[in-house]
Image (cartoon, rainbow, N blue to C red):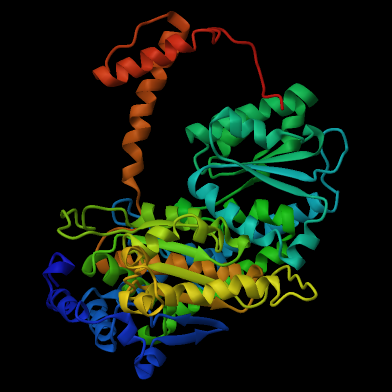
Length: 566
């Protein structure tokens, strides 16, 4: 195999094939019913239609040949076998083990990790039950009905996505009756203020999520909420009102949290892939009960098994991943819009944004060779129909942006009104079905002229069409289906990275900014405490820092504790 996938014959064949595709239009491709039928598949009630991709049956065949050249099947097997595919950090990549059945064997460094996973899951089940049934109470004897989970990045976006999706599910919302779950991520004190607003420390449990217990933003927020609790209830209350998701038991205990109330996770879990670990399972179980969260894990597991075993032509994550590679690296479409037609999935796009862009936003191969082709996607999105009144103008008549349309057959919260033409969910889904066709077919000048549109408006009302999308239709949106959706995207992103030949499981790109921020932090300390002038930065940063310090000169150099008041 060549050092780079772009040096191979299948890659070059696809590059040449683009010229053939450029001669086609989706209007014509969509009239071929045999082609369209071959681009639809179903797994466990999930229906995928990728017939609106700018691709022919031959294109898909060539993508499978590229996958073979990239050793995609072997790479998938290597991941499931616990090999150290995250080579820059010398780690296994085993988020699939987090939702494996108890009797499964998944090894990392010669050890089956599944028993360790279930030991933590069983501990979460027991702990969340005691909190929810009132056996575990706060320092003043009151039940803990409010939970604030402190974490950032993967310790926040994934759990928030699942929480938001479950909030309106009938079973989950019933189970969460009388409880609140909030997520504190940003080190901005405004986020602290919003999270503690309206809460009583007596009835609040704080979950601090930090693998090393050293993450700067998370630990400052944790110290802030520790002060909020101890100032109201006394320092001895901390151990009753704070628990940890961490592997650093020494720092957990030093912080004031009982190490017995620390829930472990492992180096083979990347932050953005950790929602199925204690990072997500603990706060979600406290809110909804472990039985609901276990269904979420089973949903993810079903896709894990499908991804690992299904032939590529019937494999949803593989097909989606290969089509993304086609759109990005061959057709030159760098972005992807994630458009769920349900408000319950409003936090899906922000989570996938991190999973995708932190995983595949790389400029070198896994061997450190500079890539001569573009890798990674720019992800964004908004639930329909909100997005239609926001950025669909650009999608229809501006840049070409491949779209993921996600629809749900049965609404979590159906509404029926007498004398309406359709019910509320049917109104929503009318747009789900219409938008992909509008993008694919467009509207020609000839059609507009036949409608007697004024000639000077014809160019403005013309839609070029030929804009690709996929449609994913789920039968419902309960905990199980949410787990499936998560795993589909996780594995799709892995497929892209495997084909591009990059390491999708490290994130060195986040380090430089953090390093420079530590220098700024030292300067702010020296300027606030000792009155030292700003030194050691470029002219622009010096000017900005000086302006900031002068404009906030009223900040005391030796402040007394001040907490937000809303």
